[in-house]
Structures are given as C-alpha cells and as structure tokens.
Length: 221
Image (cartoon, rainbow, N blue to C red; front, side, top):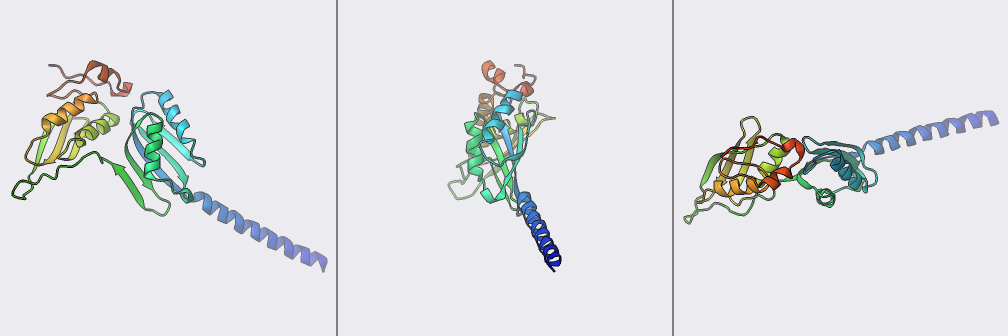
C-alpha cells in the first residue's frame, strides 16, 4: 500500500514539475524585441561602450550591434515594460544619438519613434490653403548610417514633411509644405552634420568626426 502511495506521490510531483517547467519556459519566451538605429558608432570600442551601458538593464538578452549600419538590437523581458523613452535616454547616456527606435512587444504590438524633429510649420497659406511641394538635392554619403543622419537633419527643418536619401544616386528627395522653399536651410543643416551637398560643404573637422564607414568621396567645388 505504501509503495502504491509513494508511486502516486512521485507521479504527482513529476507532473507538477513538468507543468512548472512549461510555465517557466513560457514566461522566459515573453520577451519584447528592440531595434534602434544609432548614430555615432565608429568602431568596436563604441559598440562595447553602448552594450555595456545597456547591461545596466538587468535581464537584457540577444544583444547585437552592427557598426556599419548603426543597427542595435536586443530582447528584454516583456513583464518589465521597458519604454521607448527609457531606451532613448540610455543611448544618449552612452554618448550616442538614437535616430529611430522600434519595439515589437511580446503580444505583437509595435511602438515606434523617430523623425520627431520634423516640426512645426503646417504650411498653411494666408487663405487657409496648404501648399505641398517636392524638391531634390544631391548629398554625399556612403551607408545606412549616413542615410539616417542625412534624413534626420533634413526633417529637423520646419516645413519638411518627408525626406528620403538614395545611397546609390546620392539624391535626397524632400516633401515640404508652406510658402518658403526650405532647400537652402536643409542643405546647410546637412552640411552641419558632416555631409557635403551640391549647395554647401561640410567643415573638414566635422567630416573627419564621422565614423570611418561614413567617409564618402567629397563633392568638389
């Protein structure tokens, strides 16, 4: 009789352990996915510094950093509900600039930030009508990190509603609204962050401060 009871208890304990293990495994799989485009990563040491800063978030897993593109990805426990704002601040604390941030939550919801600097000007005319226009600008650059930097600079100018740079043709296409053409302002802003345009050249020291992968063939006067 005792042997039968012991066997039954053994089976019950085994089943409980199996159920507990399955629940623990399910809990482990509940991870949010993070992808951040980071500007300023020029070398393995930069990547190490960024990763070290994010290790302050206990429970972070699957950290991967692509220096050439600036893509930074990791997983974090969904139960901790890490926010976009916290991620952006952590990148900035590490000394780098977050361009875009995307979180894919464990339940499938997607949260994104990026391009918030595109601002302010509604493009309304005095008569209440909105004028939408498009313009192009030749901008020198090399890679996806260059693309993120160029587009962010363009979107920081009031009135610019969209900016898309093609790394093959080196052409930046702008959508803008309003009475004033922002092309000259956009060109100056892009030069200020290190990229030559057909209208303005970047300062030599700014160009030299770019990550090595972003050293493009400079536009000649």
